[in-house]
Length: 269
Image 1 (cartoon, helix red, strand yellow):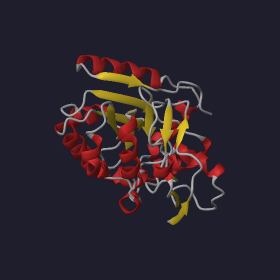
Image 2 (image 1 turned 90 degrees about the vertical axis):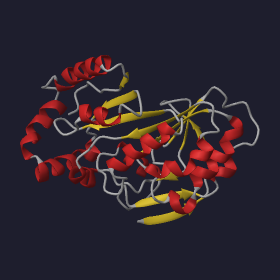
Image 3 (image 1 turned 135 degrees about the vertical axis):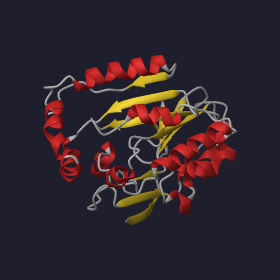
């Protein structure tokens, strides 16, 4: 893992995803084989593969203004192309320092993470009036999880962290993304977590060309019988996602859950 300390020019960035995003790091140690954010390599000049480098924006907290109303009632997402709580955060504590600077500004804060390290900052998180902690969770099978998300926090620890945040009075959500056809058991994920959250987001596997080889390799090593099924879905020869979306909506309705679906239905070939 190549770790490099850099100085950023800005840290709160306008985004098409939400009002603003904050990414304390460039790169991510989790090494998820399906990660869409590997496109960031274009801007870094790193020869290392995505998942093998992290640029640490050591001046990030200093770039947060001390006094401004600019971000009140505006949503800031922490972790759009990195995880603000991936392992390097244990050393640098950039996310914690950024949170301290954001408290007086009181944005609507959403943190998307795969890590239970977020529990470290409960004392700060409680000081935000509008806060949502969203855990990304797609795999309950640890054998698969280790292959697909090598350095990410085990799923059971994420669920325990979800429970701890819930009991601390902090609003939570689960982002079941990406959904791997016939592998991601979203119903079981909901059953295991619905006592600690009522909001679920769903996104299907979007096989960008940069990650498709990784997915096929994973299937060959684990469930080769699914390869043709995946290729049919990607080529638009299957209505799998339409059927799955209907199932999700009905299941969430039956269980009185908040349901947000971010499916891509276009041909993916």
